[in-house]
Length: 114
Length: 113
Image (tube, rainbow over all chains, first blue to last red; front, side, top):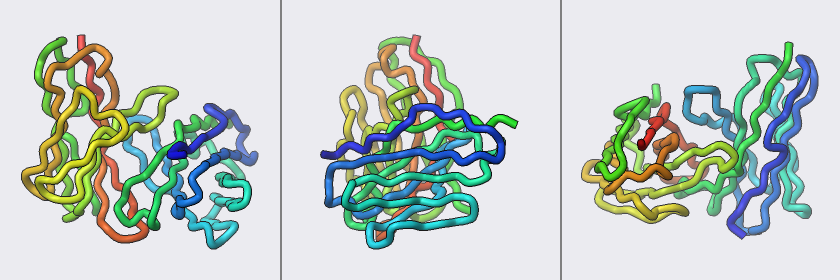
């Protein structure tokens, strides 16, 4: 119940296309769902996050879609660019992430081809 | 600017050596974390700390210990390094209170031969 399952493990998208990464969870007590982005040689950094009281959150070309009943959430990257090539991690937490303890998915390596 | 620094980017140690990985944050954060990152396994939590001199086991604490004597510094210790501890080690910090963004250091790639 503590796991967050992420798919696919790797993804290749053409420039301008839509990248979609999916995550699923079991524990309904999770109430904070962030996505982290990691470039080679760098540590992960927060990209965008959502709480279960909304079904969608958009920041620029990045959108989180959240389906509470299905216990799934996904990251959509519109108009994907080569600069978006990175590893993406979904995560989940309890208590709004108040203690900062996150459960991470296994990551998706995204390559955007020019 | 928020900053988490790790003492080494690359480290090579021999089997059986005692290894210290240091992490320092300059944001006065209460929470600090140590993860290891392996291909296909994602980020796995080793230990975390909510306060000075306080520590909690994560998902994979075996073979590791930690020390937090000062708020800004969190050390990961491999008492007797083994080859299966070859990995990328990431330190992170966050403040308490929802939501809590974790800020990561650049990582230390440890090779145990």
